Image (cartoon, rainbow, N blue to C red; front, side, top):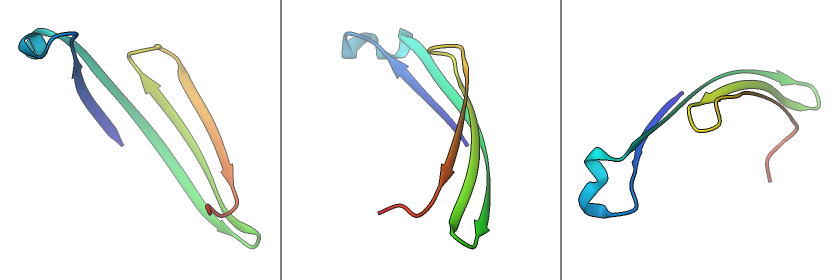
Length: 59
């Protein structure tokens, strides 16, 4: 997955505003007790790699 955006305090300066982008990779597996997925992501906003483990159904 990938995302891109622009940020500015004034609409007239949006094209010269800050660039925001991020990317993520996710792997999923259908387990007996529900789906399990592992996701890693990165964003230039906080410059950290995040890891998320999801288990179970979404309601």
